[in-house]
Length: 263
Image (cartoon, helix red, strand yellow):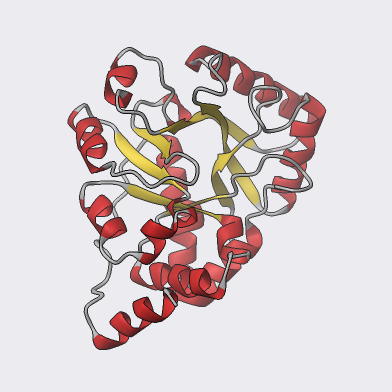
């Protein structure tokens, strides 16, 4: 298995609902390393629940974690990142320098929809692209509307959005219908990036390896390598990720798969 890259993992001690202590964060890092992960975007929430999470606070916590890893002798690279809840003034907040991009390179912004609520974000994706920032949509598969309504996720990809699925959605889907839909997404190339969305070492651990193997089973090893390594490393390095439009979904068999996944 190639070295894995986790583009979404809450590792910064005391900043959000991730690890409470630096030792807990190190335990998660050891677990990720044992999974084959070699690069992680150390992510913190930026939303109304955590108003103190400024870009500089996240940068400082990421530097502290990197220092702890060096002292531990663990060859795991961590970079600062934020998970930003959708807000109508997200473009203005970005221009005011209130939001932290993935790896602080001003190229990609990791954005999540409000919990349990689907909202149209195409116009926000366009606004951010206009100022040179590409949106990565975090775990859209958790929203049934996006996962099971044909055309919605395709429209966002056409606007320039990258899709980041969570590893536990791949390995522990909520239902058989979700599993079929995610398999269909993988085979059509809709999933571009994978993140563990790890928060702790017990109930939400930073597991990646099993999801890599599942994606390889569904859509081939070359696809799994792109999603779990090469695309993700490009994002962390702030370089363009070239993705193809989703494969055609207009055959009768694809229509049947979509209809069946919604049963």
